[in-house]
Image (cartoon, rainbow, N blue to C red; front, side, top):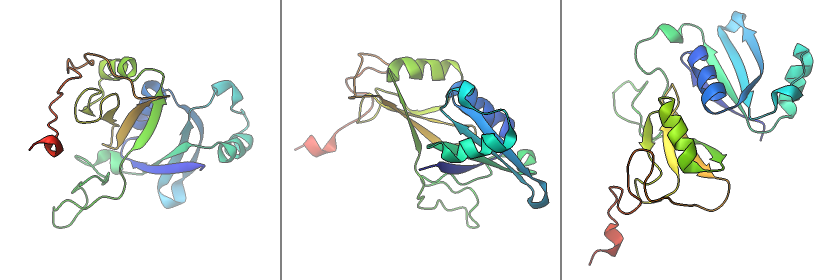
Length: 183
């Protein structure tokens, strides 16, 4: 797989998030003024491997698996509130205000230590929807990007738990009740 495209409201905020928070690098970008949008390709690549020539950069990008294409439609940055429907029962963009049964769920990243990474993401101001110890599955987390797309944080191996996560949630409990075990 070469890319996943996400529409973004504010390219500066999204590039800061994907590059500074998640550690991706801007591989290339293209401006399509005639159609009113720009695209920015980010990927978890060594910046030293990215060619300096614009055409070589684009060719390198097309050979790089796992890119995220951030597409900015001109003028969206001036709109109030969320602009794009991010899936997961979101009502953004619907005519009747009813949440849609979203198809898109999340992007997933892996890290050496979920708990340490989540502490860093929290320090950087990320909004969590699930901390490592909350919910039923322990040792993974979800937080939002600037547009509300969910990012899942997974370990680069087996799920590992720690007694307390960055938000102070203990591994035992975490607000989850397993109703399947009730008699």
